[in-house]
Each structure stands twice: as structure tokens, then as C-alpha cells.
Image (tube, helix red, strand yellow):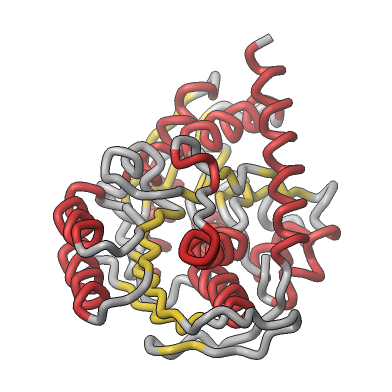
Length: 336
């Protein structure tokens, strides 16, 4: 009964998120290299409200293509809303906090921030709020955004997503998985693996790797698979790590299969080809779009999504061989 309720809830979230993405659509493109103002062409009309400046500060590591999708969504909203978007990122929590301080010093009109390591962000978020700058959270920090006084939050419930993946493994007959965490101490990643362990009836082991060093990721997963031939599933927490895990499986001569959280266009191809069995999609483009658009709506019309007490969920939804073609065209454009 509990599982049935969870499945209905996930289906409802996916449907609502898909509808929101259709409403939010305003296609843009970017090479993803600049850290200053981004101003792509907008497919839709442009707001005639006064020009405002919004900062987006994330914990993205260099080279992680997941964040390209976040930025494209943010850029599309900025173009539509007549917003100057200032994007910056750093995986180091202290540096990320300094980037938020930089945004405060620039007297921006709003800040969108990820709370991967909430305690490190707490003081500087309070400074922004004290300066009268509205702050919204997205992607990481579901359990902390309200305590830190953020207006709104956009993302998926990582615990629910992990539990859904654990159920998926049960359905597939898996017996022993490793859950590969590419950034130790990242609250959202830890919650995913904890969720998997909660519902999976087999054995789950966490495997910590250095996500900023992909050759090391590959060798660590390979070594673990060689050490334990009983591992039948590798669960990764990001598309680039899933694609690397596929190589590790081959190098180890293992029969393990790969499933993952998050998508990019190469991952979609891997699902189509059967190299990766499934992905849990949290719709990062939608997270970026809604974060910027919500600040514009708050400044121009006083709107607060979720009433300021409930998060706006953008996932989870499974992408596998049965439905991958429905997202492939969007992935090819770089928006899924």
C-alpha cells in the first residue's frame, strides 16, 4: 500500500513538472563558458518590467554537464524577464559563500543558491536577507531552505527519489548494488543513497570517489567490481559518472548493470543503446528556469511559489528504454 502511494505521488509530480516545463519553455543556447552576464536570444516575448540583476550561485564542479542544463534554464528565464543574470560557481563551500558575498556587494535584486553544504551558507544567506535581497534555493538544500529563511525552493526530494530507485532495483531483481557518491558530505547525494538503502531489499554499499578526478573515479569503481563479483548494479549520482561506470564494468569484466540519477544527451544515448538501464530525471533546466523566474515574479508581483512553506518538486521521474524516445529530442537540444 505504501509503495502504491509513493508511485502515485511520483507519477503526479512528474506530470506536474512536465506541465510546468511546457509553460516555462523559452529556448536558449549557450556554450557554458562565461561566468559573467549571460544574454541569449529568447524565443518568447520579453518583459517590459524594469531591468533587474539576479545572481545564481551554485556548487557546480568544473566540467559537470548537469549544470549546463541549469544555466540554460536560468538564461531562458532571464532573457524573457529582462534580467541580467550573473552566474558563478565553485564546489568549495567557503568559496561559494564568498561568491554570495560578492553578489551582495553588487547589490543584486535577487539571489538563487544551492545549499549542498547548508551550514557553510547559513551566515552569508542571512547577510543577503538582512540587506533586503530575496533568496531562493534550488537543487540542494530541501531540508534547510526554510530554516535559513529562503523564500522558495525548487528541486526534487532526494530521499523520495532514492527510495523510488531502491524500488526500481527490487523490480529488476537486483541483489547487491554500490551507490557511488562523488562528493562526500553533500547532503543531497547522501540522501539519495540513504533512500536507496531504505527500500532496496538487497545489499547496498556506499562507494566514495573524487568526482573532480574522473580517471580516479573509473579506477576506484573498477577496483571495487574486481574485488566483489557479486555486485550486480552500479548506481551513480550523475550522468558523467554513469558513463564512466559503464567503462569500469567493461574493464573489470563484470556483469553488473548501471543505473543513475540525472540526465544529459550522452546519457540518453546510453539508455537508448542499453549501456545504462535507467536514469532518475530531476529536470535541471526547469530548476534553473523557475529559480530566476520566481525572483522576477516576487519582485514584480509579490508571488511566492508554494506559499513559502512547501517546495516545488521537479522530480523524480524515471527515464528508461520504454520512454527514452520521448525526451531524446529535448536532450539533443541540451535542455533535458
